[in-house]
Length: 86
Image (spheres, rainbow, N blue to C red):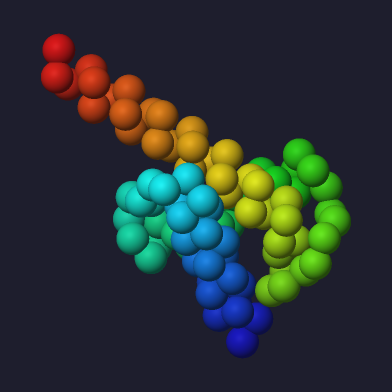
């Protein structure tokens, strides 16, 4: 049950990060889950363990990390798209 709860929370964190930036995360639900997990790792590594914890994720650092991740992925995707047009 813990794995399912972590997948749900990771997906919600990834979805929220996409909503905050107004960008879709490539991969749909799976992309949201991956962004949530990587964002949680990134945010916790940078900001540490603080804020409320749900499903093994510290929500505030995880959300900040996911927003940074979605922003970086969006910039990379945009740069790759521009390279194909020229």
